Length: 186
Image (cartoon, rainbow, N blue to C red; front, side, top):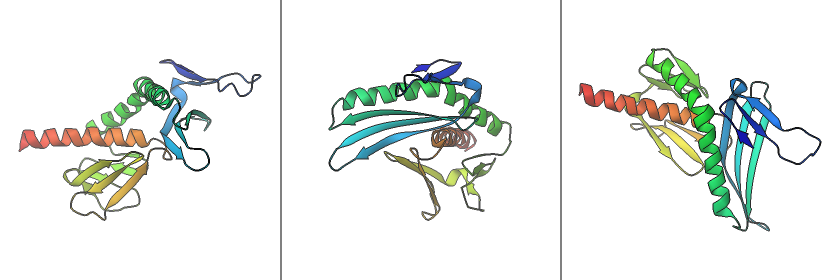
């Protein structure tokens, strides 16, 4: 695997005759990642990273640890790959949305509509104001919820939801900004 500022190239080595898959930076539109655990006859941890381009082609990266063997090594590789992907590609996507927010423009990520006063979570028509938003992070998912109404929640699974990391990053950065703004004005 090669992660360069201009492209990602991946060769899964399953078919010797197939050339490596290469996505140019400008074509990368989404990603998802997480860990699957398998229990039963074989216990395994599978670290998954999927990267999608504009043509809906997907690079699937799988790092497997069976019976806990090489677990630390796989976890370190997984973290290193994710950090490089964020640094070279996905932080730019997050910054794009943050610039839109700073310019006062509305935008959507994963059917969550962002506006100046707050967000409209997926499938909801009522505004969730910035001061009423909390984000709770768990191992395989996170929850966007209302502080005042626990029933008003949205669960986002990072392994199965494209750009869950982008949504999380943008939301948390805006919440930090809103907190600083309220302290400054308060």
